[in-house]
Each structure stands twice: as C-alpha cells, then as structure tokens.
Image (cartoon, rainbow, N blue to C red):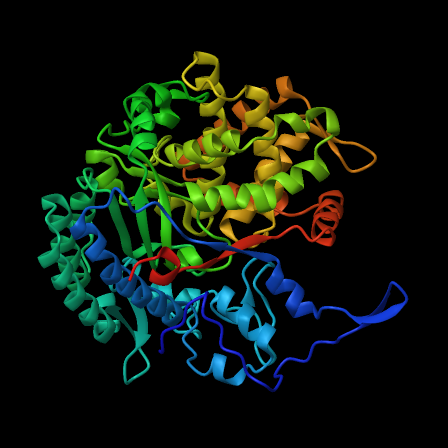
Length: 549
C-alpha cells in the first residue's frame, strides 16, 4: 500500500458519496452551509506536533528522520491490517469523505459506533484483516493450531480453504525488511548503549515474532531524551477475539525536569495496590517497582494510536511477564493532553457542569487523572483466582472494555487518596472528581461500541446510579462529592471481582445493560455536538513541522 498519513490529504474531483448542501440565511444573504461530511471532519481540531529539541544529543537528532520513516511504515501496516483495500482512496472523490477516511483509516466512523460513511460498505467486519471475513466461531474453536491465539499471527486460508496461521513477519515481510534496514542505520548512529540494545532486540522481534526480549530491553531505556515506541502493540481493533495486535508508532521527546518529579510514585505502587477497596483475593498481583513515569511531548503518531480518538498516555509493555519482572513504563503525552483539554474538555465542562462547580475543572486534574489511569492498568489482578487462566483470556471480548473501566476508576481513586496523603498538592479532590466526570462525557464521544467508549459508559452509569452526580432540569450536572467517593469504591470492588473470577457471562451482560447511552445523556451529547465542540484532535506532523532539516 502507498504511504498514507492523517496529515497529508489527497483531494479528488468527483463524489462517490453525495452529501447535500443546504442554504441558510445570514445577515440577509444566502450562505451555503457546510456538508455533513465537512462537519464530521471539522470535529477533529488540528494541532501541530512540536517539541523543545534543545536537550537532544547530536546522535538523537540524527535518529529522528529514521524513526519517522519507520513510524510511517507502521502507519502503512496498520492500514493493511485494519482495512486493506488499496483502492479506497482512489475511488472516493468527495474531498471531505476522503479526508474523513484518512482520519478513520477506512470507511467506518470510529467515534460513531463504526458506522460506514462510504457508499458500498456495510458494517465493519469484526475480523478486520486478522482473520478470514467468512470465519465462524465454531470453525475458529475447532481449529487446533495453538498459534491461532498468538498476538502476532494472522489467520488465513490455504489452497484447500482450510484455516492456517501466518506469523506477522511472514505476512508483512517486505515492509518489515525495510524497517530492519532502517534499524541497522539507527543502531550504527546511536551512542546510547540502552537505546542500541533496544533497537537490536526490536529488530530480532520483528523477524521472530517474539517481542518479550525487546520489551524487556525497552524497560531499561531510561537515560535517553528520545524514545521510540513501535511495533504490534494494542488489540483494540480485533473485535473477533481481542487478541491480534495492531501496528503503531510514537516518537517522543522527554521533559527531563518534569519526569523527575513523577519518579517518586513508582515506589508507591505496592502500597497503592494493597489499599485498593476490594477483597484481598482480588488484588493478589504484586506490581514491579522497576517501572518509570515520565512526561513527554509526542512528535509523531502512526497507525493504531492515530486512528480516530488519539492516545494521550502510554502504559507499556502489555506483556504480563514483563510487568511481573520489571513493571511497566508510563508516559504522559503533555502536548496532546493539553490540546484535548483546551479544545474539548474545558468547553464541555463550561457547558455541562453547573456554574458553582466549574472552578473545579482544571488541566492539572486532567493530567493527574490520565497519569494514574495508566498506573492503574498495572494494579488489580492478572490471573484469575479460580483456575480460568489469565484475566485477559477469561474475559475474552469483554477484556478491553473492563480493563479500561478498571483503569479509569482506580486511577481516580488513587488521585483522590494521594491528594489526601499530601503527595499531590496542586489540585483538590473536588477538582479530580469534577474533571473526571467531564472526562467521561468527552470520552464517550469515542463511540459506545469502542472499548474506551463502553468503559466510560459503564463508569458514567455506575456513578450516576449511585448518586455521584445528578442532572439538573437545565441539563447541567450537580456533583455530590461524598457519594462520588463511595461510588468509586463500589465500582472498583465490582470490576476487580469480575476480573479475578473471570466472569465473562456477567461482564458481557453488564456491559450490554450499562455500557450504552441513555436518552438524557444523548441529549447532553447532542448539545455538545451542536455547539461545535471538537470530538477529538488530529495532527500536523513531520520533520518540517518539528523544524528538523
């Protein structure tokens, strides 16, 4: 597939999808209104990805063009995985439809329940391109190959129509061989031993489909002001099994001074785990303390992290084996986070929260909530307590949404507890809770069919049903902070019990009953949308935007 990025827009001249243009009166004259597709595109506010590069070493600056090119290949690979039809952009000739397809990496609206917006396309296949689109659940279950559940294989059919597994390296060999060539260049350039080891091991991982060694090496990459996260990482796009991982890439520039201030929280993780409000059996995992917490400005997004709603924090690796031995690395992406707060969170809060409580909405609270959302992914339980295997396996297709709900509510609980302990001193509990509730409305606009959207709807409904907030007659929200604290503790206990027991049946029914948007909330979302508040952000990015020649 040719290289495609969300910041490079190709325009055509004929429309495949017809959108109506209506006229409206404006100061006595006729003015053409925006088409529906133009409005959808403009729901993504532009933001330039820049950073202070002054602390990068000479060799780190030389790595930037190489990392950007590898990141672009990750972007191309994600298109191939998630959609794969190379003719799509050639056949769409309405410029706004084409631009929206670039944002969504295909013809389905990722922030509106995956609804198709290009003529000729029906519902999005749950399989994406990780499995044959005609595969049945019975056929999958009967397929005996143990590699079928690997994060790094696709399933396809042999010449007789039977299922077979193909490793990622074999499936995407041409592009990955180019990545390996670029990694060889980067390995020669870097003078940082830990960066060199990581790149060497990552190259091996690409060729062997075994990412454990390079994940372990990445955990030791602590003394670099430049970081590069790339490979097949998250499994959100596999709606069939929530197993297959998607290609993505981040290029990150570290804020050294701010990162130093976050370091103290890593040593608190075992104690924070013990203090979770649940049955002790449901928090039997001991988090590693080799984790780190850092603040970065992100200068490149590619692939999965750039599709639809944009990632603003990272908690990796996802491998439980790595987390058990070394913990995880948690990155807060400050520039993207600030963009979302300024362009989305603050306007929503000013519309939804009753005036007397609007002063409790703050960027600092948003920052801490997001930070400890990522911390919370490493807490709770990783293995079921009743012999059902790992939580990931037992929760099946419910795993992603319940894990995101867990991180959301535990993250808020951690922030509130640390404020009361005096460890976080720049915000109040009221700010944390108010900003969290506004964040639910922001995130549910990701779409109730997406893992984060389902998670946020479950959180919203649980908090509302337990009195954390009430909705006034004029559509504004009043927050009961005392009840909010009790609600978060009850919700944490329920989530961790469900995960620890691997209760897929309960999880599935609960998310069906409580992971949807009710009529009153829909009215609120309609008001937000009508006000023209952006749904998410998109980027102008590249070496030229960054000022690198």
